[in-house]
Image (cartoon, rainbow, N blue to C red; front, top):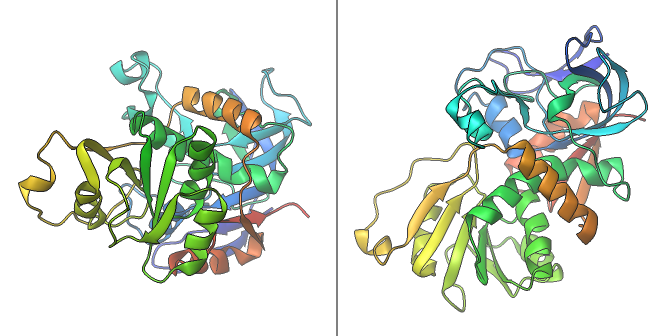
Amino acid sequence: MKAMRVHPGRRALVCEELEIPEPRDQQLLIQVSACGVCRTDLHVLDGELPDLHLPLTPGHEVVGTVVRAAIPGPFVPGDRVGVPWLAHTCGACSFCRGGQENLCADAQFTGYTCDGGYAEYLIADWRYCLAIPRHYSDIAAAPLLCAGLIGYRAYRAAGEAAALGLYGFGASAHLLAQLACAQHRRVYAFTRPGDVAAQNLARSLGATWAGASCERPPEPLDAAIIFAPLGSLIPQALAACRRGGRVVCAGIHMSDVPAFPYSLLWGERTVTSVANLTRRDGQEFMALASDLVLRPHVETYPLEGANEALERLRGGNVNGCAVLAVAR
């Protein structure tokens, strides 16, 4: 099988021929149809995440068809499944037992600590796979598995915000904006200065306002979610929030946060982060996605075009999200 792999010291993925893996225990062998391209994949490629063991196949927004199961389970050959970021947890620690399996110290992650979906096949534990609503194509479903899921967890962390700011209007934000607007919230989209395409996309999806991240919105925000990996956005988002407002950092990696005056935090404003996701997040979000019919704006690339997709994402040139069309 073909796989696009990260190697030590390489600044680009390498296309390799590998043996098709064999499933064991609760694993499924899945033929990949589509895999979303996420900024976390860039962090893996750039070596910005800890405890990387290379070579590695990235990709954690995977849609595919079950080929074989090691033991009987809920999915059978021919079923379509989604493989998200969370790949395995210990099930025994206080976090797992307390409903916070996303914080398990022994967790495994698709495309980071185990091979992911930039390949023609992968293996995944069926206990962490998700059924996908039928009305989404493979390409449209792929972004739901991280951009949608992590966005949803951040959205819940933001609370009942009537005026919601989204900093970094990419894959997650453009899906989340559709959810927020459907729930009658006012969305304020913040982009890189001059990114007219992203601002127009935000308005077309129902955003009340769209502008540059350095601008103040027309009204104080009840909460803001930061998707861009820039620590400098935290004080800007705090300044845009009302007293009691909350800033949620949704990325797995962010540049250092600059010093800022305490007055920005005072007034019971808070800053928090979201880490990973739980299986419950996945089930809840897929139920919402089934009811709402989200419409991802997608650029597609062949598997061998993964490097081009990543470089476009790095340069901020993807309007919406990028997806590898693996099966042809």
